Length: 212
Image 1 (cartoon, rainbow, N blue to C red):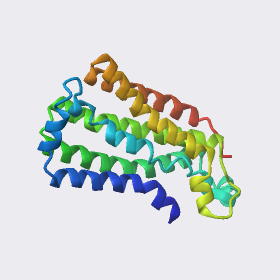
Image 2: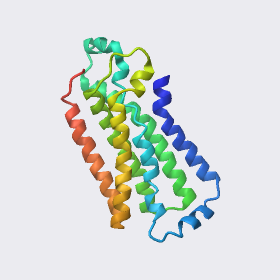
Image 3: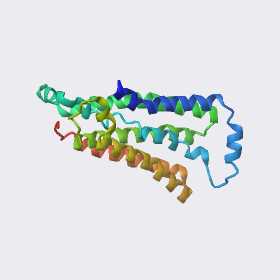
Image 4: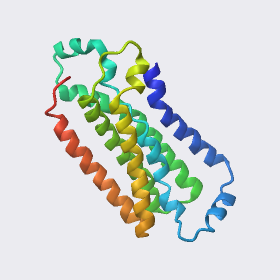
């Protein structure tokens, strides 16, 4: 219960924030933001759900949650790849619907262009995938199997901290590059590509991994 409450909270918060935006009057806020001519708010919008996606990985402590049952897992006729895919699938099962609902709702509410709408879906999804795979790799490298209470595995692992830091840095650095280069869509699209390639590379390395 503690595991799901902590890891799924970000997705619940994303849906609540999306609902709040959909029912509120956004025109005064947009008018205020329009006073900064160098700031393209709509093009930077994907960074907000991406930030929540980067901090809401379920994989960064999923191996640690096995705890003392790890010995049983090693004895089962299940490959390491299948075992890790199941953990990643749980993460994506929570992430993908929440991010797609957010993108669809905000696209309609804010009347986004096709490019803005596509990036609003693609960039956070690529961040969710990258952080999910990254969380698996880090938790496999730094598992915490000796714990007495669930909260120690969920909140106290090195892999949890590192995954959250990486998940926060990705959208922050992407936003900084967008603002610096004044090329929002190209930088955001490049960020999607880099994250997907990184996820594929790390995923390829995980296929050769062994259970801790």
